[in-house]
Amino acid sequence: MVLNTVMPIIMFLLHWCMRYAMRLYDRHFTCRKSKQAETRKTAIQAYVDLYSGQEFIIDYKYSQILNIVFITMTFGYGIPLLFPLAALQFLVFYVIEVLQLFYSYKQPPMYD
Image (cartoon, rainbow, N blue to C red):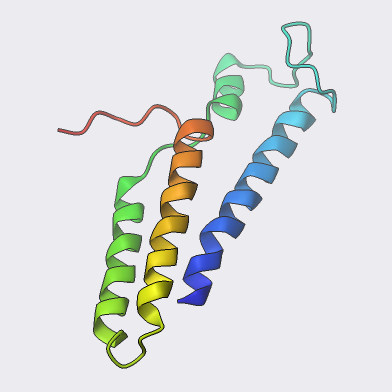
């Protein structure tokens, strides 16, 4: 459960660094983001794919929440430390998802 608390932070930072490095490589290692900055992409769709972000996958996030709840409710009465760890995991999960929603994901699809 401690690993489940730390892994979303590590994955978020790793994904952010990889995305920034790929964009920096595309701009020939310059920090200019203006229209005069050259790009290595030859097709518009490849450029859009690089700068638009990843898809919002709700089923993976839902399964993570269910996994935390299941493990905590199953083993929490024998190991009471799991309840504060679960609360910490939900807090970390919420903060990481809000950051990714604002800075990383494409516009999520409309769910009804």
